[in-house]
Amino acid sequence: MLDRQGSRGSPSYSRIQVEPSSGALGAEISSVKLASLDDESFEEIHRAWLEHQVLFFRDQRLDPADLSAFAERFGALDTYPFIAPLPGHPYVIPIIKEKDTRMNFGGGWHSDMSYQEKPVRATCLYAIEVPERGGDTLFANMTAAYDALSDGMKQLLDGLRGVFTATKVHGATGLYKDADHPMEMTKNPDREEARHLHPIVRTHPETGRKALYLDLPHVERFENMHIRESQPLMEFLYQHATQPQFTTRFSWQPGSLAIWDNRCVQHYALNDYPGQRREMNRVTVQGDVPF
Image (cartoon, rainbow, N blue to C red; front, top):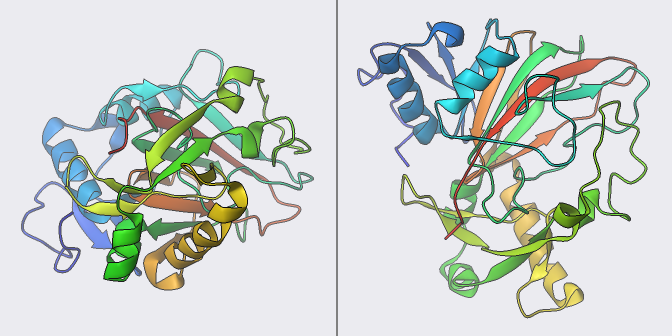
């Protein structure tokens, strides 16, 4: 991954303006309209994305087709197995919290769809309606979190794999079993119960940097270990990686868009806006088998 230092006003960007966010990751991109993006501008956006891990855009006007077209520049699009997509747009799912909804979607640190054999590379989220106050999203830099570990801990984690599954969230007894989400939830038993082994430290295929790859909602245990044996180390890594010094925070406005790299980023949608409505559209990009 490129060094975040010196990115502000960097001469390496001639088509876009890149303003690094406060904190350990992220940058706000301006001077660009995503609905009419040329190839040269996208090349700079992609380079900034690898450098900053999550990019934020303001004042965009994107219908579902525009959103899909922008996300598809990063790779082939993926479908989501547990929420019905928008009619006519198979890759776009609505993320809605009504005024009287208790539980939000994505409330807890996680990496999107890490339970798949090939977890998604990127998530693109576009704001349609947001609360007057609250509803921010936190992001965590899992590369910085790995770098901060001791050499002894890095040696311990080398070669360790986790058992990733959707069942802790979407299964019959999972977190969402009593959720009052207004979206049309879909049952997908095969995807709910499937388990895949992924390294707890994964190597980014484009930058070569190592990052922690573990989120409690989607990791059941470590390979060849019982759940109770795995839990203490899992809890330590989870708490370590989400410390404030590894994070940034984004406040949404209508027309805001964020795209983040699930290979090295976790995120957390805050549920701090009771009595207010929030509506987003989300698209994900297919990824590779982690190594």
